[in-house]
Image (tube, rainbow, N blue to C red; front, side, top):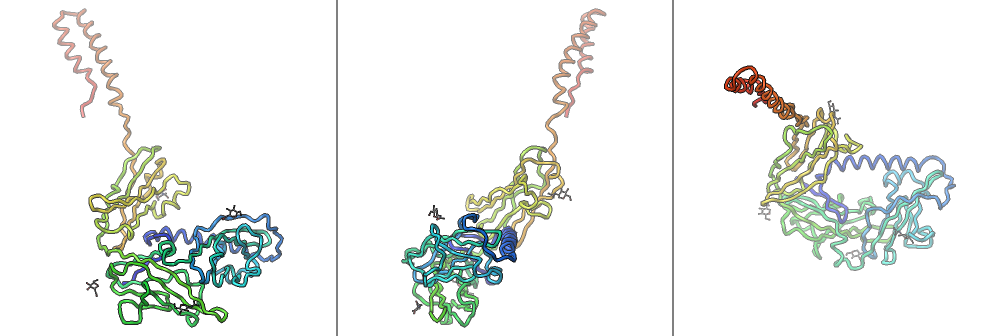
Length: 422
Ligand SMILES: *[C@@H]1O[C@H](CO)[C@@H](O)[C@H](O)[C@H]1NC(C)=O
Ligand SMILES: *[C@@H]1O[C@H](CO)[C@@H](O)[C@H](O)[C@H]1NC(C)=O
Ligand SMILES: *[C@@H]1O[C@H](CO)[C@@H](O)[C@H](O)[C@H]1NC(C)=O
Ligand SMILES: *[C@@H]1O[C@H](CO)[C@@H](O)[C@H](O)[C@H]1NC(C)=O
């Protein structure tokens, strides 16, 4: 089975977050579609003045690029596919932060193409913050994106490399990341893969370039395959050839077939209405890696985040830890507070790993009240007992002799004994 995992540079993200990421992606897609459709409303008159543009902040991703190579800055406000088709050229404009001058201006190395700014090729002086502005008759929004340019690739490898993970003993592929802007036609480009200075593939060995997919297939991945890889894409643009280099840092992790064992939650959890409650979902992975296992909670058939938009019930942060060589993951479910509806809701902790999905359900039960009549009445009955005893004693003393009175008192003691035995 082929498996590979890709992340944006600088972030280790495991596909184990897939279900939540999918929801996130759908939400972002929806937002972007709404956003783009707002920008592409019919009127093309530019009546909005530069002054009243709303600034949407700095894009989370910093473009880390190498000097003397082409750079494509995409406006994060525009969804690439839709933007290419829908936005007129003049809808998106670029400038450097702190400058009013539109780009490319007189800069011959730069071109505005669709919603992107191309720099062919970048030099050290291009580093800095760029602002893209998207406007139509009624809206104007801006966002900035930072570009860093590295001269010395060798020493900056740890910063500019894209982390990827493959599983030991499998046949898996590395991917040449962030290259889709360059030469969509296969004819216009070629890709070469290197480890250090060694060109990979083509010799019938364990490495094979899968060119049309911009991937490198590694047969029977071994621990020694860890390290830095480099893919170089050569493409032609307006009669000139350019190289685009991406660096990938490969980590190999051991295959684990250990089935995660769900330790908690319990079947039913007792809680008092109105109080706070935390139900941990705790999973033992044995010696397995937490990277490939994800945990999340559902209420009935809905993800907790969507089921409780006001946040009365929330998922706590994921914790990964080891005890005596055993790895654990824990994700708590927090109630603040517990209400009656929770007693009818089916809470499930879902564990997704390489061996499949496991589900553990739990229900919240109303805790028996700690207030008990037996305990509350005990002191009262004692008082009654004593009073009764004294009373009886006085009565009997008056009626007959002292000895008889004592016997009656004993009988009375038994009659008055209201403390129930369990
Ligand atoms: C943009 O420039 C202004 C002043 O020139 C500065 O205060 C601001 O921090 C810059 N923003 C970014 C995101 O670099
Ligand atoms: C994969 O490589 C390991 C050594 O790294 C070797 O022991 C094993 O036989 C290889 N498996 C296959 C199917 O070639
Ligand atoms: C691209 O890289 C190849 C191989 O490293 C080199 O021969 C070629 O001159 C480079 N082209 C450019 C435009 O830098
Ligand atoms: C879950 O389903 C039960 C029964 O259908 C319902 O009473 C409860 O309100 C539901 N809980 C949530 C959070 O939707």
